[in-house]
Amino acid sequence: MQNLKVALFLAFKSITKGQKSTIALMIFLLSLSFVNLVFFASILNGFGEATQKQITNNLTSNIVVDPQEEQKEAFIANAKEVQRKIERVPSVVAATRRHKLAGTISYEKEKSAKPIIVSAQIAGVDPEEEKRAIDIYKYMVQGRYLEGLGDDGIILGANLAGGYGSSGEEFANLGGVKAGEKVRVTFSNGIARTYRVKGIFKVKFGFTDRLAFVSSKEAESILSAQNNASQILVKTDSSRGTEDELVKNVQAAVPDLKVRKWTEVMGDFANITKTLDTVVLIVNTIALVVAAITIFILIYINAINKRRQIGILKAIGIGQNVVIKSYIIQALFYALSGIAIGSVLILYVVAPYFVSHPLKLPLGDVGLALDIKLITYSALGLFAAGLVGGFVPSWRVARQNILKAIWGA
Amino acid sequence: MIEAENLKKVYPGKVPTEALKGVSFAIDSGEFMAIMGRSGSGKSTLLHQLGLIDTPTDGNIVIDGVEVLSLSESKKTLFRLEHLGYVFQEYALIVELNALQNVYLPAFALGGNQNGYKKRAQEVLEIVGLGDRLDHYPHELSGGEQQRVAVARALINKPKILFADEPTANLDSVSAKVVLELFRQLNKELGQTIVMVTHEPEDVKYVDRVIWLRDGLIEKVENQAVRN
Image 1 (cartoon, chains in turn green, blue):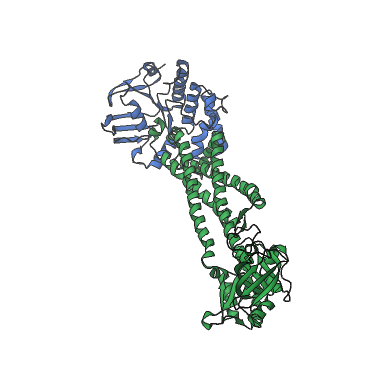
Image 2 (cartoon, rainbow over the protein chains, first blue to last red):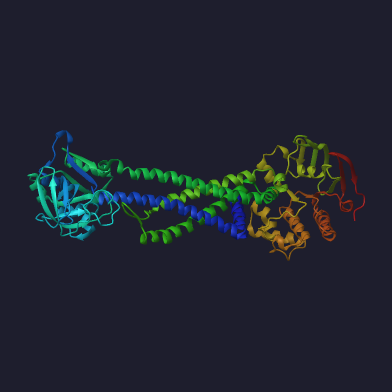
């Protein structure tokens, strides 16, 4: 205990009486290291989070229910009853039935010109049900969303419509169709119908912005079907359990159907978040090593410059452990100061900046995904780096022979 | 108080240097002894071994009945802290500490009442004539004053032996005299055992006995019959 008191005393004096510019530089470097740790992880987390939100909010929802492949059924029969069963599962917030249609959409931009024809995935939805599970209705850039089952219009994604400044427009599109104009859809079963474009949506996610939607009543008339669905999208309350648990709950309600979480549906694309986790781990490990080396170098230079003083301390009977502890305390002080200043920079400068100026990426606006866990882990990482970076050089210098230390040999 | 037996010190290297070739002597409690000799005679090396800041290649040292060379490094450190005081040739003070803090640091490390050791540090600084320099940092003190702070620091834990390695070498004659007078006063009035390395012939008038070294061996031992 007395050793710790002496070490604290020596560390305190070294910090308060040491060269202010060196101390300020050290703390500044460590605060940047902390910002680097938190920023990179949170921006990549933000990227992953934005991807997940785009998929779960606008494309697949959290869980997708399909007919079992081995039953070779193209549709879920008695879809309304199935939907009600799913909605009764406690963790389920909403469910929406979809009819999947494929076809080509043609648009005559000018009367005399050749129509533009583009292949498209078209879904039939109950607009009111759909709104509870999927957020596309919030992203109408022109016109309006479908209104009720009797709606005979079609809504188009911006990348499919073309001319809305989307990053996915390098793919084939209709060349700038607008709400109120007419398009002709030829479905894969040969049926062709003309629709008035009710609205254009733009969620800023390529997969979604190439879709088109009609009402499910319209879809059933094209497919000559009744009370069935190609798939059911299920929105769940993530606070009620893990994704696997929620899938299990839904599967228990509809054992004859194929129930998958969104990551399974999206396949490799969904793995992007896992890949990003790996990248974050690698980059953060490197950043921590760099921070530890920074502390190591600065403490080492400090200790080397005070080698004679360390020799004197040992000669007058101050133990080697006391000297080492005093340098570790100094390193931890620098690390904690860096964490404190870095936290202020992240929370009050960097994060607010990204709220007002998010990164504009093809998958949408990406900001920092900050959470207390990330900040805590980064702080603990830098603290550990301070511990190692402070111990190794002070131990190397403090164990030196007293006379060599004093003479500088 | 100190018994040195057949002390040898060889510094390794391409050509190993034999600094001490077998030195034996004893120092009594309350004695003020000087170690003298030409440059390279081994006098500082001898003091380093006696002061436990270096380890002899061979031989034995007994201080106050303790075979100190058999102690572990941490026990040697504690022994230095509790029983030995050391004054270096250069003013070896901690630059971030003021005079009072420099002096009480060894007492602080030893533990005990904070007010007690601060008061004692103040008293010792008054003994060395620096009662008005308590808050001064090393760079605010003259060479002689710094050396007196170092002497005060060496005395704070009431050491059995005070070792001084050419303590006046970097001082002007006036400051040197002040330090040597201080040593004599400590020795006479407090019975402090002092072992001092010096190369100044006039310093012998302050001491009881002189060990002369030559080429790592004791050349002669002189008792100073008359002390001023």
